[in-house]
Image 1 (cartoon, rainbow, N blue to C red):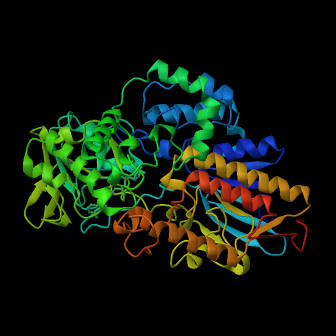
Image 2 (image 1 turned 90 degrees about the vertical axis):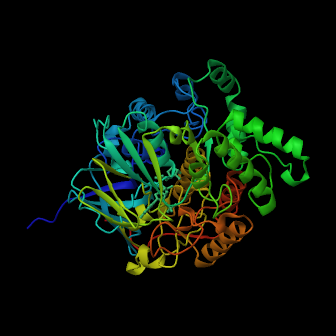
Length: 541
Ligand code: NA7
């Protein structure tokens, strides 16, 4: 029997979201043979899968876009201040066409396993289409919020009506006039609820933990904003790269809330509330680290919810009380709290009456039965590590990534893992990642990885691996900076707290994208400090 054919590439890239697409473009530009494998039928990653009603980015459009091509930036027109999912998907497709990426992407192909061969220094990768691939480098562009959670609720699956999940929303669902129950009030739930509330007959929102949410003030993109951005793009892009979270419109400041007069502070809170977006969440430098400063902001936002929501009891239920402001992912909404003034919308507090079971006709809480036609799960993701751990990744000596990470992800710079030579992660755990404008972080990672591969080639080397010492130090540093913030006080997905049994480890690097970029550049400039560079014992056959 003839052995199955093995395809060879210099680099295999897993995922055709923004990270995988730019990585491919970059490596091709260096003359390397790179290939992307993508589970979906098209490019776009997050924006390919998340098609639920109201899905929209919460960073301003011009900021949430690639910077690597001036021409791309100049020719693309965003229609709204915060681009909707469909437009982001159009953008992804435009990028794919413009840079002719599709010819090096295999769609509808999931990577099942990847294992490293010590002898040859090559990765052997297998797909669900039965292909085997060998590659020198393996880049995981698998996304941070791409492994959707499956409902772990008793009776899940027994519902006889239509069951939907925000993470895998089908085309052409008409909810008009329907009775709908939705579980989950994170970003996905809040965007869905806000959008469908006016269409559906009745909406039952099952809320376990209320979320802080601030207004987007979305609307058509002001042409003046676009003009200003393009006129100053070099400067703005530089500011993004040197900033805390990669967003210029955040208006970062060194001023402290606790040092302001009440009048000044309220004026600033109000000014930011009127501007909208994430800038509302970062009015002063101490609100993320000092509980007293945080409370001032939390009380201000709670006051806004009480102003908007007419029924005081409902308003009270919508105000978070168990964690500091901003320590769970802040939601940016378009009229979310207003929805609760509609007669057809009912908020159910799962803390008071927990779900006992999903039933054939709806859902039973400890208090009563609810009946509806459609059940929507908006229950989130196994964030940051989920998409990597779902692939059977094995490094040196057959070491499984899942085993290595049993007590939480261990990485050097969030880019690499000791014991897994020549494997890179884009926006992996231990990098700013989900605490930043993803595109800014993606571009930085892709550029760094490409430079590393280039440097290796120039030195006739072909194995790069983080040392266990550098990795341990980095993990300790990531933990330490998190400890200096209030983030550890919330049961967030940043900490893995939303997945039963997942180790409680704060995964993203909170030190800021500017600082982080300097660290990465410094490592490369110092002969890849913390890495060993070598040659594999055997050449590839
Ligand atoms: P999130 O933010 O993780 O939200 C998931 C929501 O689902 C959250 O309100 C959860 O409540 C709720 N949830 C999850 N499981 C259950 C069960 N079993 N019962 C009741 N409620 C449940 O995910 P999203 O998709 O909304 O957003 C993910 C990110 O995408 C977002 O942060 C942005 O970065 C974009 P909990 O808080 O766990 O009590």
